[in-house]
Length: 581
Image 1 (cartoon, helix red, strand yellow):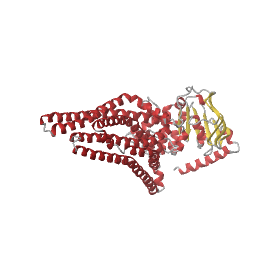
Image 2 (cartoon, helix red, strand yellow):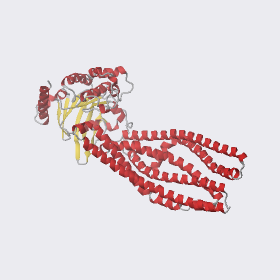
Image 3 (cartoon, helix red, strand yellow):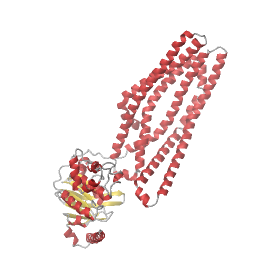
Image 4 (tube, one colour):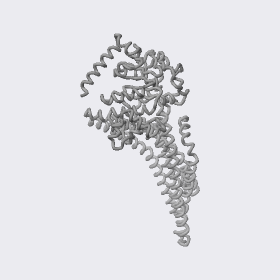
């Protein structure tokens, strides 16, 4: 806990000056509020009861001046507080986002997106409000409590003790409920995240939902999740209300006892009416801080759950993309030497795989689904690290190469490219800072996007929609190809890069890809024969092992996996061509 609180302090420290100013303004406002009951006593005892009307304007003027000063101080304090606390929130949220961006890929495989979003938004916001609000509110309320208590003691120690007779019992009740509030707060946060996850997953898969006729099913599941959340909210509200309400009730009972005793003292002329009015006002000023402390206690127990959830994300292992040496120009080859990798213990995805991707050549990687092709791509990009063996670039271990430098030198065009919600131009230029509009247009032309762009009213500035929903699968893939043209990579990785294109478009894009590949080190992952046949070298993967390696002519004459693959691919392409008209 201490380590986590020190971590939070790092976000608050830059705003200490501004927050100190907020505290000072709050203390001045508190001092003014403590003076107000004293003016009330003077108004009753020195002006109204004796009929000293000449003093009335001065007392009323002083009251108005205190009210105006309080308003100005409150407005200034609120503005400075909002500015400083918002900066703390932005700093916390940005730091957590940066960390999550670099989290190991396995984390995203086991964590729902809605859970991550809930922690970034809701939990960080709750944590920020407590980190900033609690110290400021505590200091202001503590000063008010101590000041009012001192004045009450000076007025009547007996009434002060009666007015706070039951406070210890309320404090004990708060302490006894602390663990229950924390566990309920954590449960509430988890259920809220589950609702968000359900919403994101359903809307992201809306095409499947509609195609399956499962709208009503998803609506019922969403309603059920929300009903569970509502039940938790109501339980937490009931417990927190009791936690705050019972001490408040005890405090009110004590205040009533003190008021009855004070009334008897006024009746017996042991206390003036104005003093009793002032005592009552100061008693209220004691009640308000104590009730604020009760609210802070509940908020802090709830924030304890948020603190755990936020730092669970901060503690997820993350990549250091800047550690290591810069990638030198590829001169000779990328070599996989006895590389093994497992996503789960006992289920290897690659087993002692060895092959070479020579500089300036095209290497095709073929194999059935699950053979390990995508794992090879992930290892080359250092999304994952081999559990055995090593990958070398011109003889130097890939593990020594800076991830950021490596990835800037690679362009990956996959079978299902991801597009951000933005314009076509923004998606083409993504990851390529400083490129001109002319460069983007040229890349679009080479990727056979020109006809698509001309047909759109906004051209390159047409929106792509969420995940490219406004474009067809083939159009999305051409945007990804245009991005690769613009990137001019050292290593081009084509993972079924033309699988979503129609026959005519594929022919045009294939020629453009050929231009992009010319003289460039290329790894092709595909089941299309045209991409395999022209490769300089073909590597066949089977159950995570390299079973064959050579040119098309060398491998097609041998019996085995590759020959069966070629015959199946040719039959598939013939059937596709026959169906195309």
